[in-house]
Amino acid sequence: VELDPDFRIDWPIRQGDIFGFRAWDQQPPLQRYGVVVTADCDIAQGRPDQELVFVKIVTQFDYIDMFWSRSKLERAEKKAFDDLVPQLNKIRRELDATVSDLTRSEVEQWVRASTNEDIISTLAATNEGQQAQLKKSLDRHRPAIECAAIPPGECCFESLLKVRSETRAKLLSQAAGELKSQRDELFFVTSIKEASDQTGYYVLLDQIGAIRRDQISDSLSEVKQGKKLAYRFGRLSKTFKYALTQKFAFLFQRIGLPVDHSERHNDCLTRLQ
Image (cartoon, rainbow, N blue to C red; front, side, top):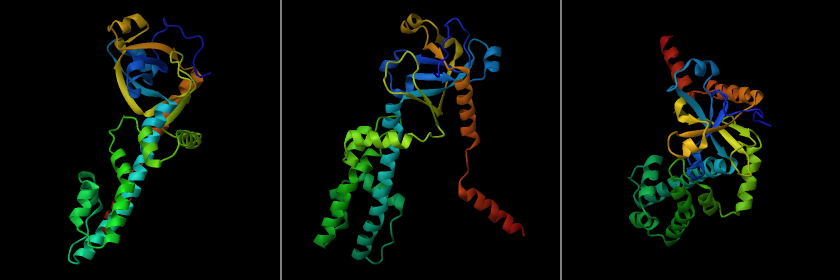
């Protein structure tokens, strides 16, 4: 439905064209597919070596694996330090009433750089019950803290399974339920023609890239031979192309500023009075 059924490879490159990078089935998810968002008027006036702006496309499962799962891991890590910061500071004060509380960032740095045993040993808590409670907290939160350190762009779903101790089916059901309400940074596409995945796709409107126009080819063999970077194999229909570019523009129109920016503005105005 979203693709132009009349698309032909002899058409010139235009906004809404979908392409796959060389050997896309062997590439990491964020290096597989893209859709051109550069305006048609700019493309028509550009040179062959013009840089075209595109946004990346991933399968729905890849989005869950890389982005949705990461957000859950980050939330679990936040909960871990919400619990550990006051607990560790309480033990430190009980051992030495003169010490100052550690800041959250100091606790985070300490816990990430130390083993659970090192932390317990450093505190040297004399109360066995206290030691047991601290060990229980550290053991419970350690998986979330370690998994949240996975570098951006890497898969997180299997790590989330370990942290949440839930079945694969239950987590996927939760993700599907949350993704039914469309997010600002996502644009759903049922299929992109060349791919054989059975799930749908998300265009990631906040994942932007650039590619030279003359590196996109209409010949798959030319791409396979290494002469070009990407193979163009489809185009969004006009309705969906306009909807995508409208949502792309709207996403960046809605970028907000931190609350404290407004507060600083008000403070400066107050000092003028």
